[in-house]
Image (cartoon, rainbow, N blue to C red; front, side, top):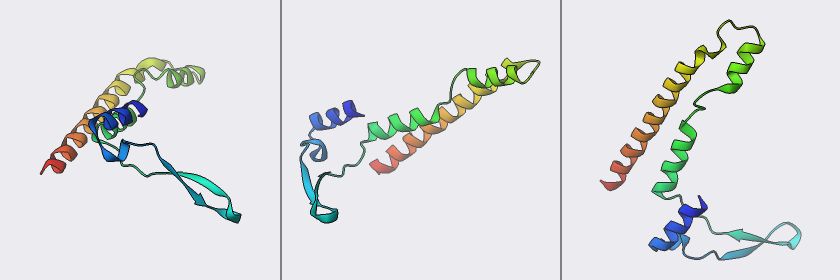
Length: 105
């Protein structure tokens, strides 16, 4: 995310040009630093959605639990895990594409 913020600064996005922070009087007159609020760029949103949407490709922990509790075939969950990962990633990509088109219109 920090690298994507640097990219936005290079593009000239005014929200990312300076790292200025202000001071705010808080409880009992103590001044605390306050940073400016920023909105996430399109690339940041896509990165976050794809990162969240993908599950573990080979769920080693679940296989270990199933083996520990006496499952006959503990690795049988690999195919459903790959399928679930593919579906969630495709759903995330489609959502990003729909939001990108909505923003352009």
